[in-house]
Image (cartoon, rainbow, N blue to C red; front, side, top):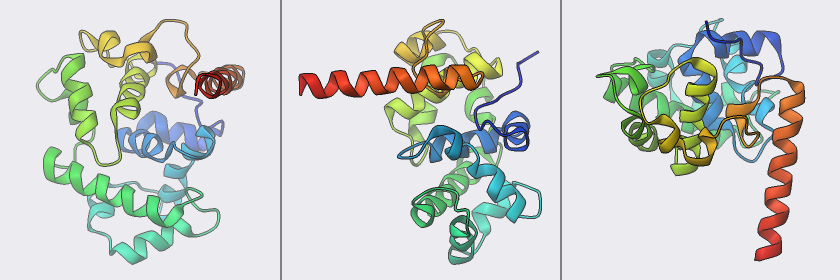
Length: 193
C-alpha cells in the first residue's frame, strides 16, 4: 500500500493528489517559481472550480479564455495563473491526443522501463529533463510506480533517503529539509558562478 501524499500540506488537496494521476501531474507542471506546496494545491483549486471534478477531456475541450479565468480567479492556481492555466490545458490536450485521456498510461502503457517513462515524461508540454526526472522519482518513491531502471533514469532524484525534491516530501519536516537542500544548492551554484 502506498503512503498518503502530503505534498500540498492540505488534507483535501493531498487527497486529490492521492487519487488522481492527472492532479499529481498538474501539480508537477505548476511546480516552478512558487513554493511547491502552493503549486500542488493548484489542482484542487481547479477541481473545486470545475464542480468537484478534474477531467482531462473537459479541461482539454474547455474554451481557453474561460479556463484561464478559472486559473486566475483568486486565489489563482499560480503566481502566473494565466500562462500556467494555458499550460495546464495544453498538457491535458496532449494527454487526450497521445494517451486517449488516460494520464497513468504515460507510465503504465506497455510496461515501460524507467528510461522509457522518463522519455515519455520529457515529451509532455511543460516538462523538461529535470522536471521529468523529479516526477519519475515521485512516482517511484511515493506512488509505488517502480519500472526497472527508474533510479538510474531519475538520476540524483532517485537516491534513497535524499531530501532534494518534491519526490522526498512526506511530511512538514521533510518539506523543510528539501527547502534547506534547495537553498544550499542555490548558494553553492552562486559561489561557483
